[in-house]
Amino acid sequence: MKHRLSWCALFLIACAALIFIMRTTGELPVILASHFDAGGRATAFMRRADYLHLILGLGIGAPLALVALLTAVYSRASDMKLPNRDYWLAPERIGRTRDFLVVHGIWFGSLLISMVCYVHWLELQANRQQPAHLPDNLVYGGLILFFLITAGWSAGLLLAFRRPRGT
Image 1 (tube, rainbow, N blue to C red):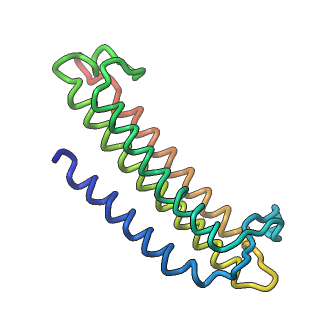
Image 2: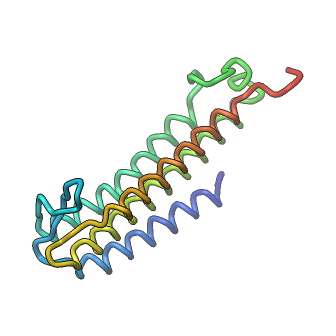
């Protein structure tokens, strides 16, 4: 199987996320704070069972569906919008280009699952307080880290598709 390490990492991250979410959702109140304003005050609530379905769908289902879609598209694509596309889509390189994009899609899916686990952890922290309060420094810190990693990932993709020197 191609990309065994990447697929194994995604599988392990998804399994760990599933276990983490399933084991910790029971710690939440039956009716939990699910939305917070800029000051961290709860502004909306939902049932724990609904939250569990939502977080599993968004946290594991959506990223896995995205990876499956990207894999299906990139595995067969012959015409993609890439920098230096004529070079990277040449018959002798298109296989490596597809493989590279599939692997990067898998790792991005892993990043998304990890981010949703962080959001779930924030929900746990917020709902342990009375009244429920979301610490904004943890929210902003997590968002900044996520965006920095995403920016680095995007820059890595762009750099990977530079035309090699001498070609």
